[in-house]
Amino acid sequence: MDIRKAVLGDLGLIQDIYAYARAFQAQTGNPHQWGDDGYPPQEMLREDIALGRLYVCEQDKKPGGVFMFEVGADPTYAIIEDGAWLNSEPYGVVHRIAGNGTIRAMAAQCFDFCLGQCSNLRIDTHEDNTVMQHVLQKYGFTKCGIIYLENGDPRWAYHIVKEGSSQE
Image (tube, rainbow, N blue to C red; front, side, top):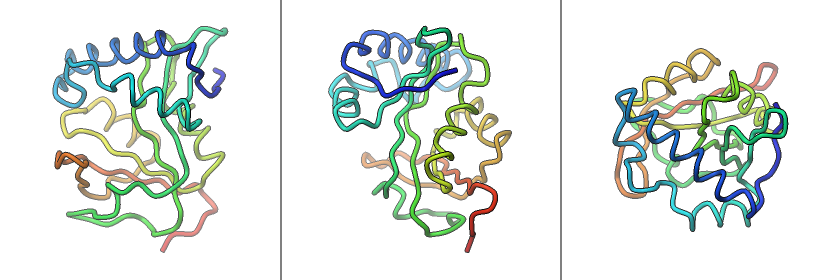
């Protein structure tokens, strides 16, 4: 699998991947995380592309996945309840990871890519997203507590520190 930064010309394919992911989530018991209203909105995707933080996963030059990754503090991660982050060092965040089912072990390859750039990685997911929870735990993420999105919705927060990095 190859990972590259998304460009505006990818927008239609990216939206198709997210549509597939929304349907998959609904079929696997998670109809509320992204709903059926077209999340993530096109404006958000355009901003992610402009800021160079949206990535496309390709297999044989065919897009099959997408995710947002950036190194820097996420304001929604400033407060965590019912637990604590593994450390308070600078970290990278992954948001809106989605695939269309054509790339095997896509999430693990995305996490490898991100940890290659930042040894401290955080991510969150909806309590009903048991598929992602399984993927995160299998990869080695630790469930650390609950964070709240800007709109107040709770999310389960996960954290991983690459081996050889320090933990507090």
